[in-house]
Every structure is written in C-alpha cells, then in structure tokens.
Length: 210
Length: 210
DNA sequence: CCATGAATTGATAGTAACTATCAAAAACTA
DNA sequence: TAGTTTTTGATAGTTACTATCAATTCATGG
Image (cartoon, rainbow over all chains, first blue to last red; front, side, top):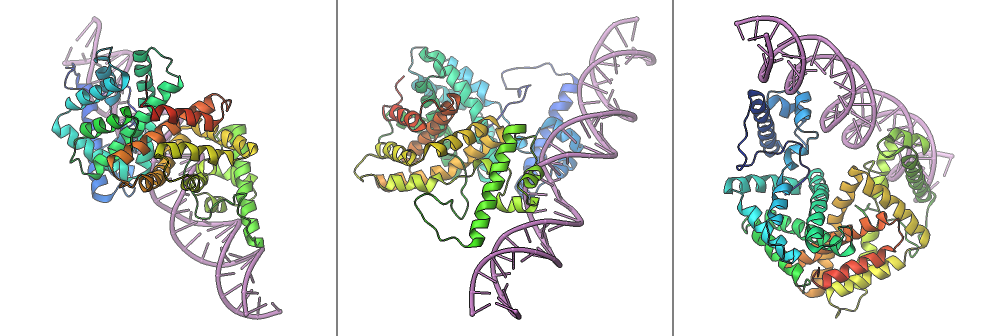
C-alpha cells in the first residue's frame, strides 16, 4: 500500500526462515527503529521528529538508522505488498479479463492480512496521507507498482506492456487505488479497504458512469 | 502539467496587466532564475546543480532564490495550468456527461498553448519524469488537480464531491493523465499530448476493454 | 575454545537544502 | 524630496543525508 521495497523482503507468515543470531539481531533492530519512529511521529509529529531522536530512542547511532532506512520517509512508507499482489494476480484463472482478475487478486491479497496488520497499515497510511513529504513518496512508490501491474496485465492480455490500452488501464487502476486509499483513511478504516477498492474497480469496469 | 501553483499566477497571454517597475523586475528575476536553473540542469544534471550555483548564474543571492521558489524542485515543476483547465471545463455545455466534457476541455486547454510553450513544457516534463525527486513532486501536485477536478465533476453531475463514484472517476482520470504524460515524454512529443490524453480518456469511457 | 575473516556498528567530518532574522537598498507615494 | 513599504543580501543556524575508517561483534574451521 505504499512505496519501494527493500532488497531482503519482510518475512511473511508463509516463509519459515532459518535465522542466525546476526539475522535475528538485524530484524530486531529494524523493528525497534520503526516502532520508536512511529511512536515519536505520533507523539510529536513527523516533521518535528529528527532522525537523531529516533536513533537515540532505538539505541543506535544515526549512521545505523540510515543503514536500515535510506531516508526518514522510508520508515513509514516501506512495505512489501507488490510481490504479494503479483502472486495473487498470477494465481487467478488466465481466462479472466484483466480488470476482473485484478479485483479478485486484491481481494485475496488483502484477506491474507490479519486484522492487526491491517491496523498497522491503516495507521501508517493515515500518517502517509497527512504529511506532504510522505504523500509524495507513497505516490512515487506507486510507479513501481504500476510497472509491475503493467507487466502482469500485458502478460494476461497478450499485449505489449507499453501499449496505450495497457497503460490507460494500469494508470486508471493506480488512480482509483489512491482514491480508495484516501477514502479509507478519511473514514478511519470503517469500510474495509478491499471493499472500497472492489467498488472503485467496479466503476472502472462500467466505464465510470456518472 | 505538473504541481503546485504560486499565489500570484503567471501572466497568461489573455490578461494584460499594468506592470509597475517593481512588478516587471520581479517577473524578470523569476524568469532569469528559472532559465538559468533549467540551463544548468540540462548541462550538469539536476542533482549535481546546487541552488548556490543557480543563484550565482542568475545574479541573485541564495536567499532571493528561495523567496521566488520555495524548493529547488519548484523551479521545474511549478506551473499554472489548473485554473486554465478549470475554466475550459466550465466553458463546456452543462448537459455533456462529465468524462466527455473533460475530454473536450483538455483539448481546448491545450490548443490555447503555443508550440513554443509546448516545447518548454515537454522539456520540463522530460526532466520531471527522469528525476525521482521531481517525479514525486509532480505527482504530489496532481492531488491539487484532483481536488479541482473533483469539484468540477461533482458540480457538473450534481453529486457530492466525496462520493465514491466521483472519486473513482477523478482518480482514474489522474491515473491516465499521468500515464499519457509518460508516453508523451517517452515518444519525445511525437504524438501531441492532447491526442494521447483523448485516446486514454476514450478507453476510460469504454470501460477499459482489453 | 580459539584464531582468523567477515559483517555490523559508531564516530567524525562534510555537503546541501532549507529557515529565521535583520539591516541595507530600492521602489513607491504624497 | 522625505517618509513608507518592499525587496534584497548577509549571517548564522538546523537537519537530512554521504563517505570513511577504526572498533566491535558474530561466524567458522581447526
């Protein structure tokens, strides 16, 4: 639901990994930094919180902070949903029309998220939509998602991913994704995101009747 | 075709303004800063060019630079197309369906741009799509455009601007706008932007058939 | 268990984009 | 021409981020 991914993906419930002490420590440090950062952001606001403060709260040096998160923004916006979504798309029956497949994929992808993860995502997204720098970053991250979607849709439709039709499709999808995201936050998560998304994609399929 | 606007809008051919010496000087300074900045960006790249260099080339102090452009990004991304587009939408017959009205509005808005302005816009857009920081900024600027469009569309359709249908419409439009922008740049402006946009909006109207 | 190599960390120093402030200079006004 | 307002430049910060290197911590083969 946001921006770039890091090289080593976040462990998803599915993959059981053998963790050396080193790996475990790194994972813990990363988690601590992120938790402390989000706490401080909630307490004092994003802009008013310095990286130095975060580092101190997480008991690491600023250098280490930047080793884990290339920018302050990344503490909030980094996630790993793209590969999950991609997998969900690939899992759809190949004869489904692209938009329909996409709707189904979003649904299954979101259903795999536990309620506590949804809560965390809502909180992060709330922050992301309210701070301009984060909003820019999250939107920028959508370009990667678009690229991924374009590939998946083109593959499915047997078209060039650079064709205007594919581009229009994917652009429109990204647009409604963003719009749904904002509605979701605005409603404080009342309507589940997948439902909002599904509705919006429904409008798309119908040619945006108004 | 990009991001935020400044308080005092750029003079468009249409409005003849009485300019005091002060106004003229300010306009000239602004123009010089922007020209020198774009020149330096083209010569050395965006990131490699410092504000200090721009200020020196434009023969002003760095302080003055920041008075005219709040961020380095704004030198590239600032423009004033929103009000023009809004006007063009309002000028459409009220019985036209929203998407159709929008297509027509884009067409007329772009036709009002001279070829040399189109060239400058292409150059700026090219830069904006290639530098991540600028891309983020330009996309962020689209939120303002979205808000504007949502208002105009809601008004036209007699609906709440926060309704899911309006949001989906506007989000989708922004998405295809972005997609068209990228195609435009990628093709080096070969196909005129209004044509690309018109095509893309056509796909939208047809329910994105693929 | 220990020595050697590799990965991780923290300290230091530096760059560059911005912000705030204030006095000097320029332009407007009467 | 004198007084007022606007614009400017200089100065001194702050903060995100980069590069580098020595010290520390973990891994591993003997």
